[in-house]
Length: 88
Image (tube, rainbow, N blue to C red; front, side, top):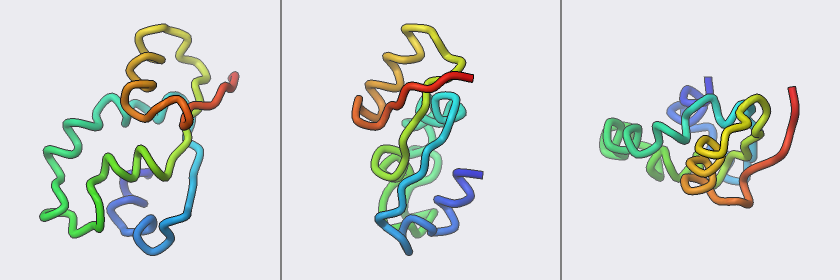
């Protein structure tokens, strides 16, 4: 659903839109480099690469993924300012 919002241009039309996504972004941050390679802006016709939206328009909760490796990967992909504590 989130990729559909991005590819549909919702964040281009509303650049200040911020969303919170749970469960470490449903694994999208882990796929971020691959998504950017598979769907370049020339193909998507978006204003920015998909990774840019994942880094700048989303906040991620950490519920249910209490593993150091998962946290570190998310931290490296999106930065500490985008991570929120939560519980299931």
